Image (cartoon, rainbow, N blue to C red):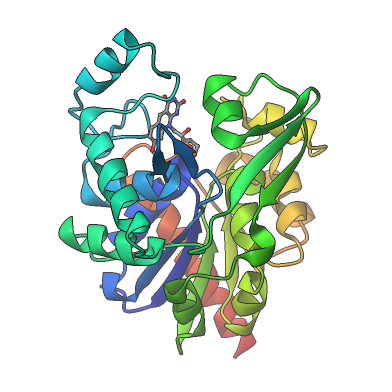
Length: 317
Ligand code: FO1
């Protein structure tokens, strides 16, 4: 088991896949996952934390792999009855998932921090890796579209990413600080690598990097910072990523991602299908098949990131 001390920055689905791979490679006492909370929103009187929940469900082995969010083996009585009451059902909440939102909202209202609640849940679900929100202060990603500003979930789920994005803002970011566990993990001696997971750089990673003090703590950690591509040039990029990047003025390609992180990263994991571009990215690159379907795929991508970090650390010493 690799004893390297690792920090992983992650959004939802793509990041959780890499986190699972990483959790199979390193001693999980040394693995801290800093999760985006910009997707969080208050809905039906509950605080909902989608990226934290995707991470919790994935590492607890109970994620719904069909949807990419929520629990597997879910039941939908709550949704059915809510529909019959004329309630809002555009954001689908399964009965098991609902228990998490109700209990977390109760504990937050009682004064517990999001970090405390998250850490207690991951322990109860026997997750060895430390999962921590990027901040305990509420930050909400807001989408400024051509016809006005809407919340992230309204954009992503209710409007199915149809609005044209003009820009994003992270409401509340000025008052946010890195969560205690995030700050502690980045300060820990002997950090081997800080890895930026293959989540959407603009929607899922930028809120984490925008937390005042976060990038300074990352740089001060003096560990190689490695980003894993969330795009494969040759592959028709599914879902909203290509549309969102184009609307934000970044052509949907690995180049855009490297350029977006250029000020921060020491290395980049590129998909082997794009290997021909490796030398023109302007940053040390390691190529691998970054498609993550099986657990072995996830371990392969995680190992590639660890290997690149080790190479770079060796060159530094
Ligand atoms: N995504 C959807 O596209 N439709 C949904 O109805 C939906 C419900 C949902 C419930 C709980 C949860 O934790 C996540 C949920 N998501 C849903 C995903 C959510 O929009 C995430 O923010 C995205 O996966 C982006 O990170």
